[in-house]
Length: 517
Image 1 (cartoon, rainbow, N blue to C red):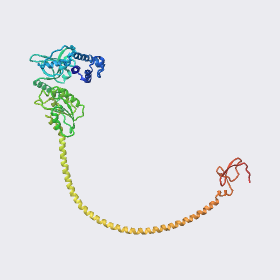
Image 2: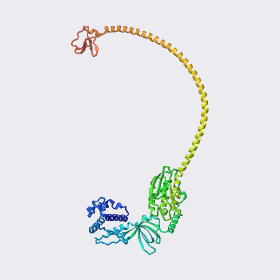
Image 3: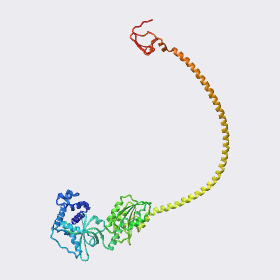
Image 4: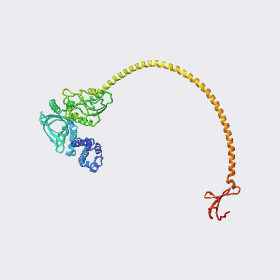
């Protein structure tokens, strides 16, 4: 099972490298692990695995089934307890002459499966190789060139994607001594062995120095290093973008020496060693270009011209020169100042010196606050002394004033006390007079009530005698029609209705005959 898993992962690595895509875009690791468990032998069994649909089967299905078939066939022929050997096992045994390998009678590999196993073994070894360029050509989106060993004329074919080559900033020509870094493979369509380079750099300090001077002269002519383009740091920066390696000591030096002024440091981990760091640095610069920062800081420790190649790359230099906010670039160096520092707005020699620049406006503000605090306290002490003197003087004046005021107050209190006694006597007299007046008024009121009561009784008797309703009890009645009392037969007609009010009710009547008196 372990060998099948390794073979499948090696096959996926090779496919992803050939197509220059991420590993998961070939197949996710979970799908490969499921293949190892299920050992699918047919299309239906393979497409039943999650992550492998019709499109994936058309592209990779036959290759996967072939690898599984080969694995099953080899295990079927192996004795119990025997280990199935791969090409990588053979390669490993070649490094240990004491170990021996006796080939067994097994089913043959297909060419594709065998090359997958070979490429899996080769892909594990990454190397840096130095040689002289003997030929080179650009074809499509790739660069094909060969390098040779000047000692014995050994030749190696090298393949490199154009986009990776453009990051190097090198003009490749025949006879140029270079160092390539990458991995080897056998290209299955042609069976050709080649070296897939990920980075390319010049070999030797002389060549690097020459390239450095040429690029420096070119950028100077373009005005990239012009002093008038340099920007000053904003006052009181708080949002800092930091680009460096998380494993280096410089990041700790930087953070330990950065003042406690409420900085918000956004960090982007990046390689800072050699040509391989170019892609990381450009990626970090592109990221921070979209972030709300006040200043960008790019730092690394000291190094030789070879180790600082990424900071002498034309793309990196232009990206720094065109960055939208001020850039502080602190890169240690032996002799030649890295071109990235020449393009930056400020180029202190160390990360610690970089923090001094960032802290400067805050430190000045602190000093100004301390001076202002001293001046304010001194001014307050002077003001308090003058105020105390003035208060003492005013206290003396106020004491005399209030003494006079108290004496005047006592006099007025005595006068008020006398006035109150007089008023109290007058109020006593008025109170007695008011009581006498009220008593007399009550007597007059009571007599008036008695008089009115007698008058009302007389009026009541008169009204009662004149009340027409009283006559009704004597046998009389009141005739009325339409709310009006009938006083005469004049105007009345036979058939008309009228009311006859008696003492205990009303009779509704009708005129049947009219007889005049």
